[in-house]
Structures are given as C-alpha cells and as structure tokens.
Image (cartoon, rainbow, N blue to C red; front, top):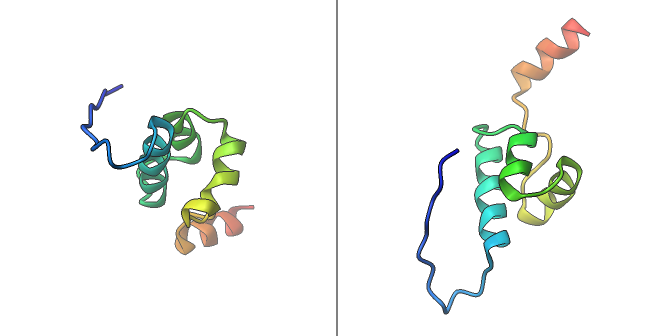
Length: 75
C-alpha cells in the first residue's frame, strides 16, 4: 500500500479521519475503489462507510446503468 504525506495548513480545521474520508469517497465515486476498499482506506467498516457516504454527497449506488442491466439479466 502506498503512503501519502500531505502538508495541510493549520488554519484548515480538518483531522486525519476527515481527509481520509474525503479521499476515499472521491475515489469510490470515481469508481477507482470498491465500497470495501474505500471503507478500508477511510479506516471504517463497510457499513459505517456506506452510512456516511450521504453526508459527503456521494451515492452508495455508484454503479453504471449498463452494469446494472447486465446484472439484472444474469440474475
């Protein structure tokens, strides 16, 4: 796993958990991480991460319509 060091101004009142959540939600929204991977990056369980997505304006249903159609057809 890669380690990233960020220099964040003291005037910006965010903690490490907030930064991790922001990064994880964006990577999840972009489809670069699965829900489980994003939750792990944020240091949370899948359930907790999924519950918090809405507060970051990210939908848990981050699934392309074409993939959803294929899944329904294969069900």
